[in-house]
Image (cartoon, rainbow, N blue to C red; front, side, top):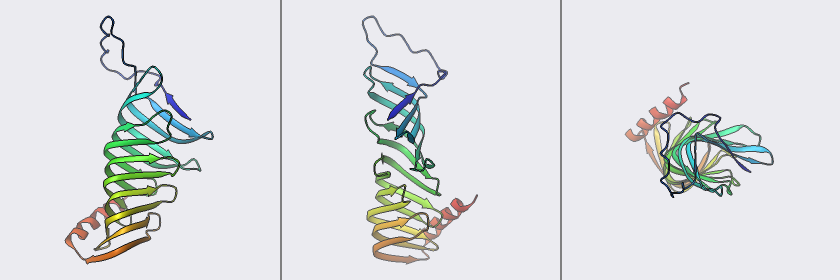
Length: 211
């Protein structure tokens, strides 16, 4: 079930102009709404937006400015926080899509940055169809078309990937990577030892490990 919570107080700002005589407004605009999706009475995800425009029938026409979206696991604990420029979806759907400066932060210490992400509720899947970088405490992964199965803490990518770990870089394809324990499986492997590029990525990992 999808629920839209109207803010108790409107956000400050200029008063919108009145429509011209005979002109009908295209819908209703809500500032700083919260959208919640629940399944079997349990919160599945919630999103705080800067602005939401809806048609008179309740269909979402446009959503602007995703302040944050929190995705919850089956036990009710938050698993992932998402921020982006825009979010889109339908009131009849459990899924949503975000675009622009997307940042997905897992509460298990992984960060995904990319330009487009879709959330698939049934599969508990964060799908990244474009170029993406994933940082964890053990490694940094760069790839395209990456899937992150949140409940399993599992990353899969059928295309070529680069993994930076220690002082080394590993290149391969068909990745399966467990974020929690750092185990991974890769095919068609090439190893690059002590590469300058790997050294730079190693510094990024150390920064992520710092409290």
